[in-house]
Length: 293
Image: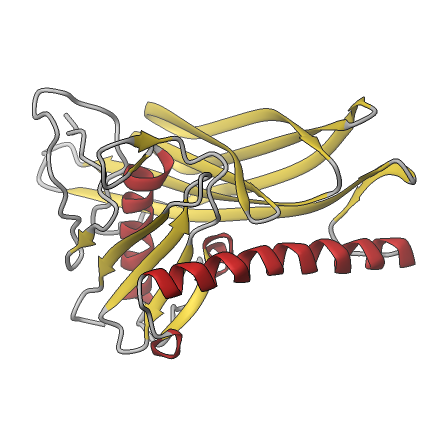
């Protein structure tokens, strides 16, 4: 039903539809496919939650990572994926598929170590088939959460989202500074490697994309913003979530890679998706934007 696609280090996603090379036409694999949005099918629940559970031992802690979503009716295919970043690097990933369903619930326990700033972002998707098979549509929503975990030998294990104590404010400053330094160092390397003029782009970390469920992206219309988001997640699932193909043909696990940064060209012609693998190999994906904005 769905074709498995090759991953390449630089991929063009033309217009509204992704262009990929088939690696094996006989081999199939589940894949998120974005179809025109259906405004009649709505998410009643779309949630991502991070919770500090307990201390595993003197050096590690346990985090619960939940991603749940529900539509107002059953649809042909429900699909959710979620990415968990720790201090700007991909810590873990989850996905779930359900046929003829309206709800997906994922509950995962993750072991972490040291004080960290965790950010999780989820993409919730539904594929809708009409009885007469006359058309196929999509519905989508994003959710996210973040959590600061203090895991230090000098203080008790605890977590917070917004700092309410002076110690929390100090830790937030330290962890935010470390994350931003890591992000900026990585982005600088990528920009230099691919010879990109930063002034031509509006730059957004992937984890911030969930803020645009209802908001528009950089002077796009709402409809085009939603189409762009859907195609973005379609491409990321194939070319980041499932594995990253390097120039030599090697496919590497994305765990440990940097958080993708989205470079929206100010002329609204394309997006660059930039990140590096866990070994520091630079990767660039390209998504062309629709001409009707």
